Amino acid sequence: MEPATDMQAIRFKPNFFEEVEHWAVPESLTPWMAADAPHFWINIHGLQDKTAIRQLGTALNLPHPLIEDLLDVTQRPTLEEYTGLLFFSLKSIERQKGTRIELEQISFVLTAKGLVSIQEKPADLFGRIRDRLRTGKGVLRDKSSDYLLYALLDAVLLPYNDSMTRIEQVIVQLEEEALHSPNKRVLASAQSLKRDLMMLQRAVHPLRDAVNSLEKGVSPLILSENASYFRDLRDNVMDLFERLESHRFLLESVEQLYMSSLNQKTNEVIRVLTIFSTVFMPLTFLVGVYGMNFKVMPEIDWEYGYYTVWGVMILLVVVMLRWMRLKRWL
Image 1 (cartoon, one colour):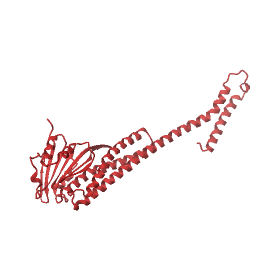
Image 2: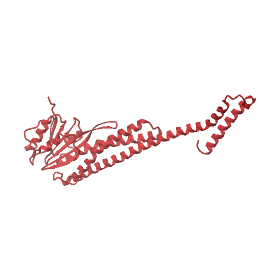
Image 3: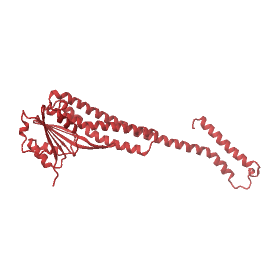
Image 4: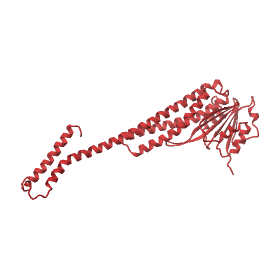
């Protein structure tokens, strides 16, 4: 049996609030659309019960293509206008473990009297908004449905800002590690962060265009009195986009710093090995000469030959090290 999708319905106006948990879709929502009816917000968790979502779409007289869009979790963030309706979809951050990010699809359908929000996963991003409506704090009950859309979109974008802050902190740590103790973990972490940033960029880039359209008032459902809120939303998205770009460049600099530090370490090792090789080359030559098994070698019968050879080798080492220090190779 297909599991039921969890729905909640809220109706509100300045001096009225009604909430129904585990709400069931009625045959018609025409009374909810009346001019004197309270505003409504229908929130859906999960897309398991597609039949119930289609029933809701029929009760709201939504076009068939729009109903199918509500069930499609693969589409990019977009804004589409229908007669008396506005469809808005975007990606939200479902959860984050460290810097690892998982996204989910969230869709909104805005009407003159209400709003439908559909979350792909059974999470709750809108708890604070729901509490504000329950308690009557702020201006949510006094505003129209488009302001509720703004509040929900702002709640969706909040985890993006938190993620950007976490990623920035990790990048700073990687920079320090790449500079002072470069290792393979730095490069692996940087590559992982780049994948997450690319995923976020694919979600934010089309969202920027969609929010710009909202702010420009492409639909009469966005009232002029609430236009300033959507301008703030646009500025927030633009800030996210710019932070994503800057983080991507910072990660590239971390990778370059890692490679530079690694090359510098390699060069230091090669330099030390070269110095040892250079110092031991003449010593090896002397040892090779006096290690030959010729019958007649004058120094072999000399009483001080052994000590003289040692003295010559030590003198060579001292002279070569002194010369390298003068050349600033040491």
